Length: 474
Image (cartoon, rainbow, N blue to C red):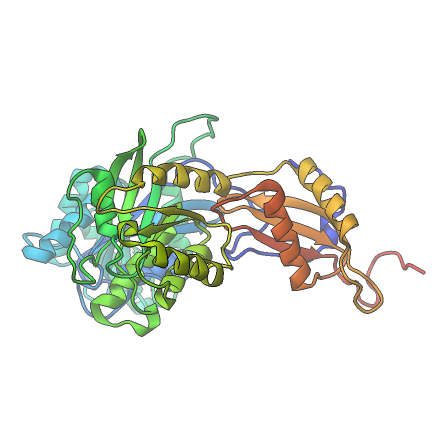
């Protein structure tokens, strides 16, 4: 563990945009997978939102809203895991319902723990009993949840669910949070033990999200790198609705590409299918490690393009910008595109850019090296000694401006995490936002981080009030 040359108890708490603390542990090893399954409209997505602690899964009081397996990161008592929301399972389903049920069964097969949700106000149904038979065939640990138990009377009625043969039912109210803590404790108990960290152990395919506004060529690019028709391509915008996962080999390495729906509007302004497609695209970006944002090189950079770029940056993912349809760009367009890049992309000069044509295959082979560079920056860690040696030289050469007769000083810095890189500056007082940006800019100039967002937070020394401990300085 790093020994700090200052007493950290003197500093105010700071948290990052993902809710973690600089003192928090880094995730270790692969995360266990928890699948939430059940018949339609029993409150699975509401429960998923309760588990992850935020309203992200789509909830609507009609069956069939969730259609795919949608993963979310979750954390309980310091244990990180992935919770997978699924569509309603029904036996002998037809057409789209059959596809939804199949996705739920795949989620069960790939899970470490299955949470089976039943509506406590109705009790077990024929569908629930058939689902139990499917779950027994999977041989996975199953936790029975009696949802919508909003009061003690319904909790007592939930005891009848013992008859399903899955053990003790856990009465909860996913909507109000009643009993959710006990349920999460039970989920953790059912998980496999955390694996030891093995240096140099092989890892799974890197996850790449293809994102962009409609009709910029995302599906065409996926088909090009896969060397086969993996996704439907049509000149009509909006052909892709659900994220399409594909394992592809590119430059001698297996990658997991996700082709996403084109984002036309802000999520809160979209409606119907487009609304759900936008949410699934946001989920795909969250689940990815790097976002490849496709822009149409033949058209001006638009507000929609800016929103897509912001989504990847705000999610803290590595970023590669692919200017597609380069075969349509002439000398005049290149001149104006250079001007647009300087003007529209000036807030993310660190993004890696490649010029490609998914249609002709031009320079597509440059994509894998660009993604690798972005991921290397995303996971880059700077030794504490080297970081502070650089920071001391920087602050001595360019000290913070004097404010109110005094200038805040940076005492020490540490890198609190990676993916993306996060740094904490321990200071005598809050820093000006401009000086904080200056430190981040110089940090990039010194250590690179090409293709990755960097987050710099400040932890000022605590101000001691009257009667507070500490020496007075004359």
